[in-house]
Length: 267
Length: 346
Image 1 (cartoon, rainbow over the protein chains, first blue to last red):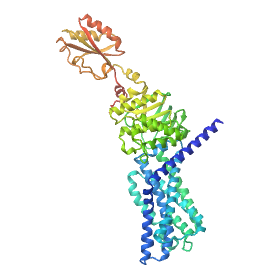
Image 2 (image 1 turned 45 degrees about the vertical axis):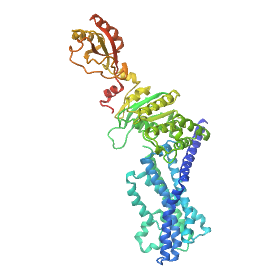
Image 3 (image 1 turned 120 degrees about the vertical axis):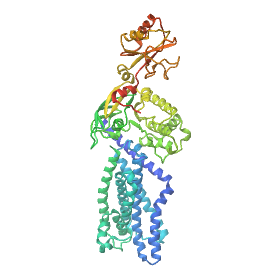
Image 4 (image 1 turned 135 degrees about the horizontal axis):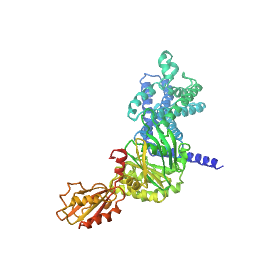
């Protein structure tokens, strides 16, 4: 009986600790809200403006391009925001500020500390996705929207944010602090441009090698999934396939990131 | 707190970082782990605090097996690292408050406790400042205050006063003594001998991953053979210094006697009668002392020095001389350390 009570107490303790750490992250983000918003908005704003607005008004792209671009940029924002929300802080916290130590010594399992990081990063990415709606309307005048596909959109955004957070966890735990700058350029640029955010994946069939490469970028399935939800008339990968691919990516990257986190947290 | 035959082996390393170490620390005891850098102190503390996984052996902190139940163990202890790991995004007051929240301390209790600790540690006026604006000594104080927010039974401190100015150091020592008086078990790693001698009830000396000695600082220093001295300051003069030295050297328990450079009257070593180390260099015998001022003779003793004062005085009286002052020299922890490891710490 007493053993059960102790175990229960441990679980409540861990739940308390988990929520307190999450509250700390939300509190800090709340205080740095303008910086967070600027970080989230600026990149998609420029991408939408140049590719969606300028190129179409100059006649280099058709009007329809705006519609397939918007879901792509939303996908890019979700994934990149999630990666950034976890990778860079984690490198700093394990590397030089050591801020994470106080949380690693809180009464909860090490895995739970990593899960908190994932959830927090995913939350930031979901907020970023939401902000994309007014930004899109502002820059493009209108955005493609279908309420009947809203559930698919929500599922893809949530899965995409978790996959992005897992990529961030892998980068943040396997990369040496001194290498972080190199890794950011070597990982980020390919990630940005092979994620099918600026083009629909099925139309790459004439460029087979590039199509194969992009199929390995999980962001592709976020872009395509959002196109399936918002602009089904554009060629796209089926929504269910996208959801399945994202679940597979999460099942692969999540554990790799968790193992990396454990290796950094416990000697 | 207890470690039993604990071993930490890292892959591709020739020797174990910690090699079969066992010790036990009582509740409310102040325990010091002494050793040079790389001796295995930090790894040992890491294993006791769930951050390093032992390869073999058992570690118990605050009555909880840290390997079997790390989560529960973390409720029992707190760690004050050498380098600041304060949350830079939060004010120091929030650092304390969130730490307590992680540990499930009730909201009302944590507010009261944070304010009381900030007051006690002289930080209340700057409670809303971020950690970046504090000096090393202040950060140390903030981290100790933070550690106390969840009332740990065991407090680990990694070189708590390294790099602090003397005033800050004394402040930290006072707080640590208060904690020990309140029944908190303290384990501190240090390579500061003075700190170990001033604060700890017992000391473990580590090198190359092994625990070389473990005892009270007094017992450790007493264990050094032939390192105790009794220095006699003698008034009067004699032309036969050699004979006097020979007579003193034949006393029971005296290993050797020699004349040392006389110092100005009353010019004691800093630290008083128990000051450690040689007070003056030995000098050629039979030269000084005959000038009628002062003669100093040092006896190296094998046992305790004080019982030799009376026999020595008798020898002097027989020679028509008067014992004016005595000085007892005891070996320091530093001497013990050098004896054990063959090297100096700093």
